[in-house]
Length: 283
Ligand SMILES: [Zn+2]
Image (cartoon, rainbow, N blue to C red; front, side, top):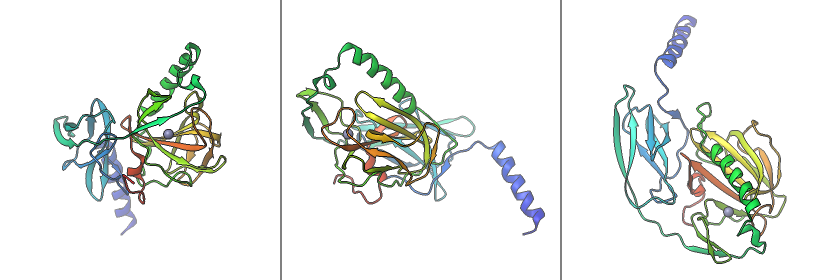
């Protein structure tokens, strides 16, 4: 290829970049599709949509091996049955794709917390909890197009992984929100690594979650790390897969040292097992 031909290709490419909106982010892997409450629907769109929406949230459109896929987080509260994805074509026309969510029964888990204030917070605690919830919700709603999400993730720490995602929880016999992540048991001080590249979106010492990190991986894929002993990164830092971000601890509402790891997709908490290659869902 001559220099001139190369330059004209580069020029054509950059012009196309300006004229045609980015349809989908190129990805090298897809998560496991599991169309259940708390799962992820991986759907070939069969088209070249510019954006997709599910339940009023923007969803990730990914280009994998030359085909476009919608990667949709399904909330734990979703009802089994027909669900709709709305796609917008480059010209602005919309199209609806349906997919079926099947039922999944999550079992009950009963935990005893010795510090009753962590189960029944006082008024002062509630002010703090509401502020922290708002802070985390803002981070979960982030949509960063500058990052290319990696959906085949490393396990963030060494230790037995429980399949505790989705458990219907009772603390001291009182019903609370279902468990929205994966717990990995490990001794205090065990290193925690970023499972995929991203940007540190938020850090904090939260009432329930203890020392916490939120990583933005782009296009609505955001991960959460809780109960840490130390936080080894700062907000705004770029991290690579395998880079240490902190250490396992037992800060916040816990019954022992472990890492609580959550994955958010289109602002919905989904099962992290679907993003780990060697982890079989339902184990
Ligand atoms: Zn947990």
